[in-house]
View 1: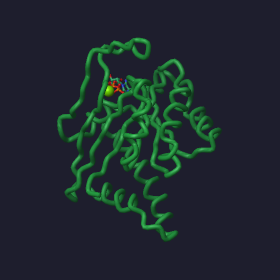
View 2: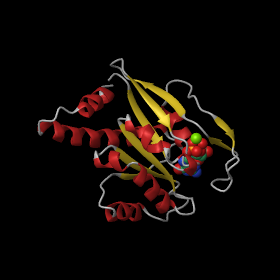
View 3: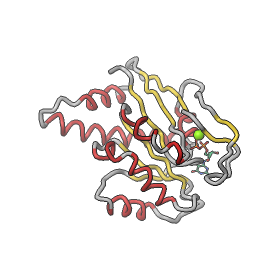
View 4: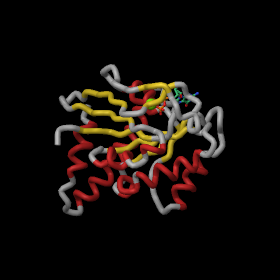
Length: 198
Ligand SMILES: Nc1nc2c(ncn2[C@@H]2O[C@H](COP(=O)(O)OP(=O)(O)O)[C@@H](O)[C@H]2O)c(=O)[nH]1
Ligand SMILES: [Mg+2]
């Protein structure tokens, strides 16, 4: 497997396109069109198909960055897009009406990836919208019996996005190393080590 892909998911306006733009080394490809779905967001434009960007690693490999369409009518696509991805970054927007409901929706979609330790949640706009707090998110995750990191992030800042990837990679590496030690030949361990050796 020479392709390493990461998926950015989350509701409309959470910052998927912005996050990919912040770290991509190519001009990201996206398909913004006029938003006709104002029930979900007042944004004038939105992504109806995929965002795509690339990050070249020093070892010659390329990280492929995908942004999933955020509207609920594309819910069926989210787990499909995550299937081949090394990891998933779920972006949430704390200014939305019920961000904890958004959280639950996306955790449902990525249950398999969460079980494998390959999901991180990033909450945006906490500065202007402090409620719910990161503790509330952590409690909501724990109440589901799941374990995953929940961090604050402003995806307009490249450093915030790379910090998210670091946390994600740490977690994948720890889980994959444990599987490897247990005798499973863990392909994710090889992948995450490749993704990190930049
Ligand atoms: N104030 C503020 N704006 C943010 C933050 N994160 C993202 N944004 C802005 O929110 C918008 C997100 O839009 P976009 O990336 O298209 O979201 P997408 O629908 O998930 O692709 C952009 O205008 C960002 O600049 C944040 O933490 N604070
Ligand atoms: Mg977008």
